[in-house]
Image 1 (cartoon, rainbow, N blue to C red):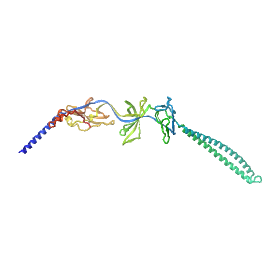
Image 2 (tube, rainbow, N blue to C red):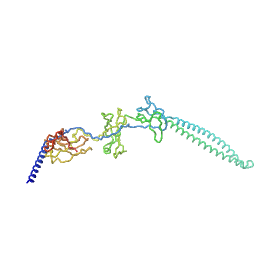
Image 3 (cartoon, one colour):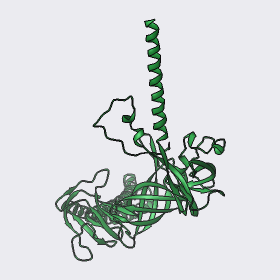
Length: 446
């Protein structure tokens, strides 16, 4: 009997607890008031861009080096009479610097002396040839007379043979003198080449500007020794024309297909954050680079710098315009991503509100369908739209049922009343120090 009574009491207590919890949950649920965050459908312009960073570079740069080794003795003078330095304007043929030429001057003097010696040798060889020719003429005359007399009582056979041998020796001496003259003349040619080479090396001690431009880098100081080996040491960097600049932009391989010559580009520099510069794509270089498995291509952007504002090697933040739309209807991307809870959808629209989100395409010409939601009394109703381009913030849409200036839902706010406070649970322990939570906001976005 007592056992049955206890069982009855437990069942009654459990029923009371379950009923109280249900009442509390019902009160808590009914106390929530859903408020939607909305945005207006507006008309405007949409620009689809690719962003990348790059470096401002002179359009054409000449690296002036040294072809000889030695100590830098002095710098040349610019148009203003000042020593060549950073930012100096130079003309073609202007002296930039001079290297110590004492050793090279000695080489020129030595080569010049050798040339004079070889010229004297030529004169001697010519004189020797003339002498041998005279001896040949005499030997030839003696041999001709000997031939007329022949070996006889008037001319002994030994004398006849002597005249014949002298004639042959004279001919050989003439040929030898002619070869000596040719050798002397060849030595003169060699000496002239050596002298020219020594003189050219001496001239290399004077560093001359090969172009007209501006010195953007001076890499040596007076007294510094430059050493020329397989690679000529760089002394000056000259930009030919700073009124024309280029921005070398590194573009990711995923975006390079949307880049083409002549494409419009805008860019900013940290040095002038409020100023926007314009340019156009010149070329896309084919020598890609890979860094940590990321492939990038260098794109040359040509820009006018007549104002002189752009300085070499500034960092540029570039935007390549790939597509644009003018005076189209735009909604925030959040409006296309937001999805309501099932109990918020109008009963008659629940069947049409099939799940699925639209993602706006980034390629011109593509179109997709999507949904936006508008408030209708205590519920929300979907509207089908055609989705166009997006810039990552707003998306182009088309819809016959969605007028301009309409309000589309981008999220919801849930206002919590006292009944939703956990402390209002009649079965929960009271906490006198607990503060009521503020209003909560949530956006149903992926």
